[in-house]
Image 1 (spheres, rainbow, N blue to C red):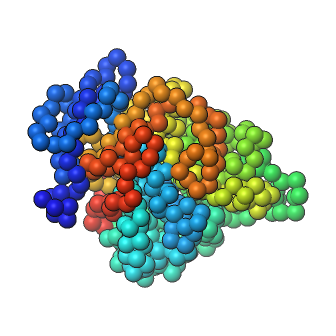
Image 2 (image 1 turned 30 degrees about the vertical axis):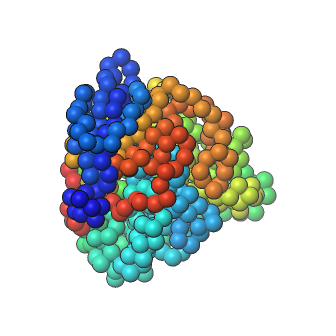
Image 3 (image 1 turned 180 degrees about the vertical axis):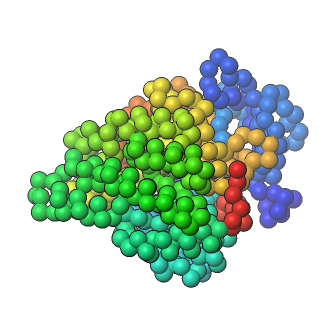
Length: 460
């Protein structure tokens, strides 16, 4: 059966002698049988048949990770990252599927633009991918035509690097209504633009001493909470589905919890930097800490972990947003926001388990099946029959020290520099094909567009 057959999604592979997750005394030895890129069976002492075999040698097996939020700056700013380098970084972090946001020109505001972008990505990506459409006024006439090709539409309620926020509430109401009619979810960067502008004038403009130590005040919890509150109100009025990206405060997470308790179709994700860093790191990291929304307090970090545990936040996505180090070393007001981290997603997630901040199963679920479910993605995020044969093998005890210069991202720096982590992926399998092993990529491309449910269909 050839690769183009609808019955075949990838390669055949038999992974022998892995350890089940979570690690510990209850773990057992299992095999994973993958036929045509799809998992056929997981369990002890499986029949290999004629499949090619790879010995896991006791490494722990988990599903390939789903990063629901990355920026690879490509097309348009390939020199900053690009799909070739970004997707290699994803494999380094155990990620086999990404949802990517284009926040630099050319934006995806028409069906033709989306088709061109998907073709561009397919020639370059080493991981499976979904590309968001841009929810702006210019895209309104094209939303229904774009909807079958994109998992969601991205809307910046607050301005960030690359795109300005929307001040016009009437326009935002129209955007939510049109997205609802298209049958696709809205993914929102929730910070209130009016509050951001007010606090920028108050704290940053004309202040030659402004540093990143002010960032969590210039982009405050108030701005995030007010924006999330408004977005949920527009969900009630329009019938839209909403995913709140990069929740950074415990108060915003509580608004999501209440919306879900009300039965509203609201999902959310946070990011590793909101969980493992805080505004107290400003002096040590300088502008490397500058991201939007801002990184808040240690209490917020713990509150976000509690929300992940309770299921009020669905996923951890990196918001991988690389910039050259010389850009980040500019004066605070001129330095761009964003940091790379897709290349560390699993070790950073496993660190939350090692610290006792997340249960092992909760941690895994937030970067696998819960992440996939929050974007209504089929076939991803489980080691189970019928799911794509995406597998990561890792040693939960093997330690390494983060060195940004050694990571695949073009940025060559990391806010987690010097962290001693465990769980670096040693083997990564994408739909039955070994694509990462012993610290290097084994595939130049081969990623495919993620399967999407028809517009209007929502997974339970």
